[in-house]
Structure formats: structure tokens, C-alpha cells
Image (cartoon, rainbow, N blue to C red; front, top):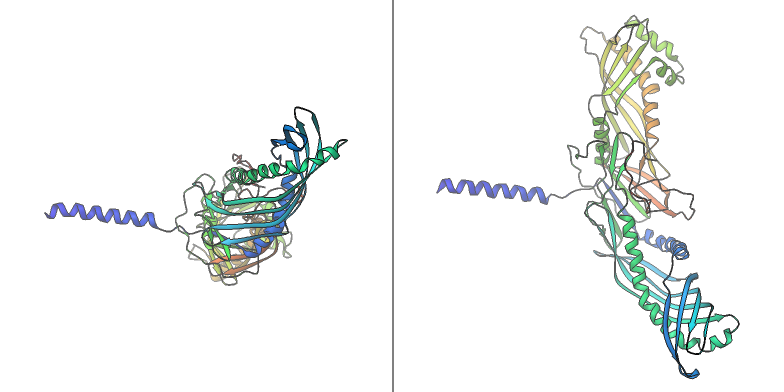
Length: 507
């Protein structure tokens, strides 16, 4: 009996642990929150987008057949083609969050002026020309539901669509316009009926076309020749009464390895604010994964030659000669030397209120290569450099810069005196401050792309360092100019086709 019970207990224990592992919640590396202010601005920007869109869209022809009893004509076949919306107005338009569902769009009392070509056929006559169609009492309501697909792309679905145009007035132009306008009124009713039947399918088709573009977005973005950044959604957007939250994976990978880092993200909560249109929370996990990915890819290994060191010490008032003379005081050095600095572990990230620091455990190796000889090590030392991270938003990117706070140096040789350690600390301070950090900051100037919609710029942006994450508060501005090119592959270029990585850095 006992021998039969033990396997059963082990099986239950295994299944229990398996269920726990599958039920663990995945936490985001980045949170993006849109507020009601963003929706209100979206109404304004949306009108500009719709105005541009309708000028480019081909509206399907409207055709039908009507009898004209007052002219004793059995039927008149009509066709309206080349339909163009010249002007429209939706004065009462609003967007609002529907908790747990999506975003409700509502507009009423809209008007539109449309020009079209027409053609009429009947047993008695046939003619063609131009006409103007004035629509009034335009009403639309629908709920846009936001979800994610299996690959982490956002998807949209239109639910409860209802669209109606209350009045339509047709005005013909041409030599016989007086005649045609006399029987225009009987044609307006069927035109209105056909138009109302077409509106929701047209709007739904636009949403489906947008989904096709969304599915082609690069949620896995190449940052440079070392890393990739995953901006995919980890779950469907969360909609409350006051905001919409997007939870993004926000993790870096080495270019040739898409395995998750050996640590997990921790939950963080955005503060309840509504003064800005958009809030972006960038967690400590995001930066830790970047540190781990770059370290794994070998990015933190720099060798500087004498010439390179000279170029980076131009701004040093003491000059390179003094630095070399300090080295010569400890080791007689008559040949050119090289300095190799490499991280021994991934740099340690720390985000505390008002303070973003990066501690770099590393080794510095001073090398020389006599003529016709192999490279020789003069001395090697371990140190930990503590830096402060400065932050700024330029365009659509988060730019970081490093400044040296302090470092601790340890010499492996036990016979070195404290005076020698101090001398090397002074030398290393100069090399780091005037040689290595300028190289690192030049690289960091490329920045990290921030998630933002197509043709939307960040304005009035502010950055705060909170416990465990950065908080970016920003307003939005819709760019109508075609000069602005998409720069962030994850969310901005809606018509961007996913590219194969070709080894070049992302723009």
C-alpha cells in the first residue's frame, strides 16, 4: 500500500509545482499609460488624421435604380463614381474609456461636402456629369477593443458600430442641371440608404487594414551590433475609467541569444497622475537586462592605444605627459603602451528616488609591446567605478550619460605600498574621466527608442527617478509633416515592413 502511495504523492507534487510555474505572473519591464488628456488630444489629432486619410482613400461607387413616376419613367439606373470628400465637420466628437472593455468613440451633428461624377441611364435618355453631395446629421458610435496577438503585437477590433447619415442633398451641375435637380430629391433617399449600409463596413475595413500594419511592426528591435530590444506586449491592455495601460516586455537580448536574463522583473506601480497625456515607466529590470546583454555580448571590453589615449586626453590640463610620467615613476617605461579596461561582471544598476547609479566592477591592464615582440603585461588591477547616470529625452529617444563619482582600486601584488595605490588611483581616474567615459557617452548618445505611436512626438517631457523605475511624463504632438521619418521600429512606423537584420545599427 505504501509503495503505491508514494508515486501518487510525487505525481501530485510534480503537477502542483508545474501548475505554479505556469500560473506565475509575468511583469513588464516598461509600462505606458495614456490618460483622458491623451484621448482629448486624440480627438483633435484624429480629425487631422482623418482629413488626410479621406483625401487619399477611394470611396466605393454608389449605384442603384429608381422609378420616376412623375416623368412616367419606369426606371433610372444611376451610378456615382470618383467620390471625393472635400470638407467635413464633426463638432461633437469624444473619446472615453470603457473600463475593462476599450475606448468608446462618439460623434454627432457631423456634416460633409462630397463631389462625385454621375451617370444616368433610362429607356428615354442617358447622360453623365458632375454633382455635389451634402450630408448632414452624421452620427457614429463604436467601441475600439485593444488586445494582443500571440506574437505580442497590439490588435484592434471595432465593436457595436452604428453609423447613420440623416440627410443627403444632391446638386447636379451641367447644361441640364435644372432638369436633373428637379428629380434629385427622389434619388436622395436610396442614396442615403446605400450610404448608411456602407459606413460601418468601411470603418471596419479601415480597422482591419490598421491591424495588418500593426502585425508587421518590429516589436523586436535591433539597437546596435550588440543587442536587441523586445517591446512586445505581455498581455492585453488594461482599461480603467481614467486611463489605459500597456505592459511591454522591455528586455534586452544579446544579438545572437534570445534567452531571458537570469533574473526576473519585479512589479512596479505608476503613480496616480493625470496632468500629462502619457506616462512611461521604465523599470530597473529594463536597465539590468541591458547591462547583462551588453556584458554577455562583450561590449564592455575596451583597449586604448597610446594614440587613442592622447586623443581623449586633449582636454586634460595636466596632459598625457604627466600621466605617463606617473606610470614611469613605478615602472620604467620606454616603449608605447596600451590600456585594456574590461568589466568583470555586468554593471550593477540602482534606481533610488532622485538617484540613478551604475557601479562597474572591472579590471584595468596596462600592456606594452616591444619591437618584434609579443604583448607584455606591465600591471593589472581590479577596481569598481561608481557613476551617476544623467537622463534627457531628445526626439523620441532616452539619452543617458555617465559621470564618475568614485572608484575603489585594489592591486594584486601584496608588496605595493599605499602610496603606489594612490598613484595608480590618480592615473586611473584620469584614464576613466578623460578616456573611457567620453567613449561610453559617445556611444550612449544613440539613446534608447521610446514607445510612441505613428507621427507622434513627445513635448513638455519630464523625467523622475523613483524607487525601482524611471517615470517619464510627457504630452504629445501629432506631426502632419511628411518630413518626419519613423525612427522607432516598435510602434512608430505603421507602414514599416519587418526587416532582416543586416548588421547595421538602427537609425
